[in-house]
Image (cartoon, rainbow, N blue to C red; front, side):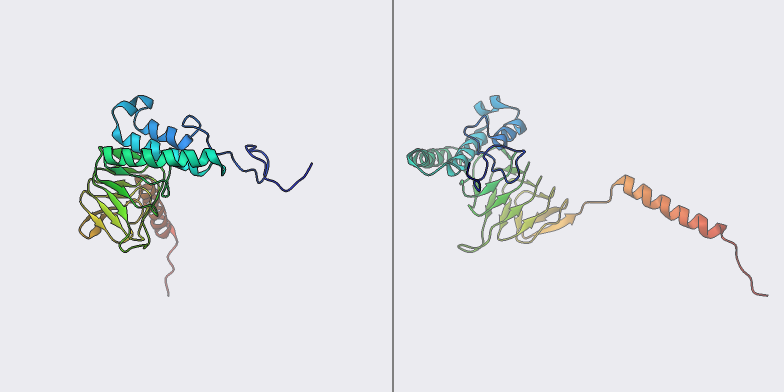
Amino acid sequence: MTSGNPVPNVPNVPNAVPRAPRNAREDTEWQADLARCGGASALRREQSLWALRIYRYGRRVDAMREGSARRWHTRFYWLAFRAVETITGISLPKECRIGPGLRIWHFGGVFVNPGTVIGANCTLRQGVTLGNRVENGPCPVLEDGVELGAYAQVLGGVRLGAGCKVGAMSVVLRDVPAGATAVGNPARVVARETTSSSDETAAAAASASRASSDLASPMTMEE
């Protein structure tokens, strides 16, 4: 038995290469997209899922082995991509990287540059653009749980921290910290993630303890 080749689809073997999903049922990222919209039945009423389904299909096609099957699926993908893009007004090219559980509220005017990276469980709305500022320039990176309001524009090599929010019609040209809220044109941070109440309580208790210790310590007096 020859060695040196990666072992496919064997999670307990070191350096194993996981097998790419063969269809939509095996695609855990697509299943996460469905779950955020209420399950498979949402396909009948959520046009955004049509665009997401074609995006996930394109990613699976790119993971296929070279050959006639992959070439056929690639041709079909481009046909389906253009049709859905025209019908829904949502452009999600397979070259961009989108984590599981993407939610797009409503549809129309949503354009994502192929160089964009979107984390898990992010939320977009109609009119959102994620792109570069100059031709072939850097594109945005959205960490997990980012939420964008309607017609928000995120342009250039900016990074939106996990859980941050961008207001409707804002134009983001700079990084937004995790948990912060940014609004305006150009967008500026108007609120930041505050310390949790439990942390505040712990800090207050520690401060009171130190004060009590200071009062209890004996005072020395010079004679």
